[in-house]
Length: 78
Image (tube, rainbow, N blue to C red):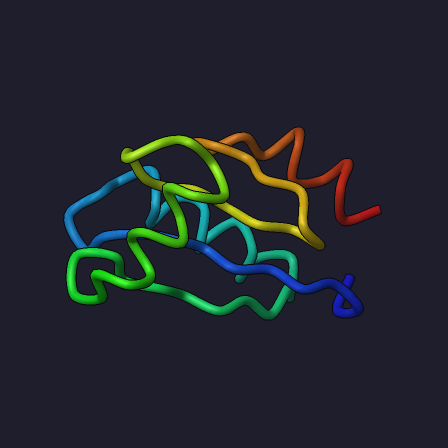
């Protein structure tokens, strides 16, 4: 599972962001955590990738997932 590029666009106050990061931690998946509340350029990148302003937005190997969707995460990490 560690051969994947995973980026989590999140904010500190978002519970689903926390759940997503806990999921990846529990599976031993390394990920880049991007706090879009502090990084305007990253927030714009997230919107460009996903078309969404809400978090979490997760990028797994270029596939964009909006929200906490562990079944989708698992499938993409197989």
